[in-house]
Amino acid sequence: MSAPPASTQLILNCLRAFAQGQTLPEWSPVEWDTVLHAAAHQRLVPILQATLKNSALPDDIRQKLDHAARQQRIRTALLVEAFATVNNAFVQASIPVMPIKGMFLAHQVYGSVNHRYFDDIDLLVPTEAAREAVALMHQLGYIVHPLAEKPDWHHLAPFLHPQSQVVIEIHTDLIRRASPGWDVAEIWTRAARGRIAGVETYLIDETDALIHTALHARHTLYKRISFFLDAYLQWRQLQTRNQVHRLPELADSAGAR
Image 1 (cartoon, rainbow, N blue to C red):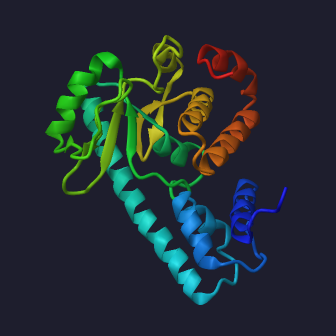
Image 2 (cartoon, rainbow, N blue to C red; image 1 turned 180 degrees about the vertical axis):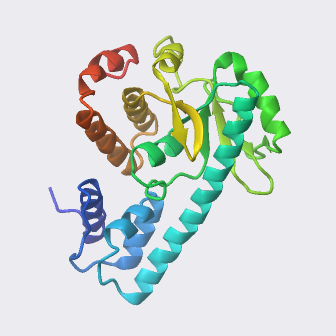
Image 3 (tube, helix red, strand yellow; image 1 turned 90 degrees about the horizontal axis):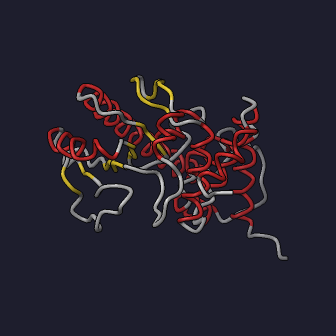
């Protein structure tokens, strides 16, 4: 098996360094524009900046990397603010809401909200609250996204805020499926109250979150390297908290063994 291109190897080394809490001071010569393009496509620009922050990058590359990371931080701040507003509105309306995917991982797994790229907000609500949740989203100024495809059965059409351009997906389940499987009611039972983005909300159980990461990666055919970093960091978190023993049983119940 041939070695991966130098640009790919650099990205992999950055992922490894980030997972170990290290920086990457040295590397082999690479085609930097290829690296930045691949990092943007794989949504890994924040990881590159974090692991190459102490490296002597070419000035123009440092500027490009810092600019891309800064733009993502601005976007992330906008998303976090929107989440806090929507979450609090749902709480006021007595609608249980649980952030999942990027919003959850960025706050609860990555150590910094700016290290995990996400470009929309995914919220889980009970199925019976879906109609009320839709009405509330419209009250908050959101519209059904003009480019939305036909709503999937496990989440509604994405909502778009015309001014901020924030996109929010309201989910009634965690996975796309055509037969009984993972019991979303049990997911709510295992959730706990906690805080994300400075507001109180429901937090998905960490083991359920890892299973969701694995199922979502499989559904999208593992198209992004970031799925593997998500899973590794979540697995390590479960190990640290002595919770790995819960994984086989819950994975079986979710059909994700």
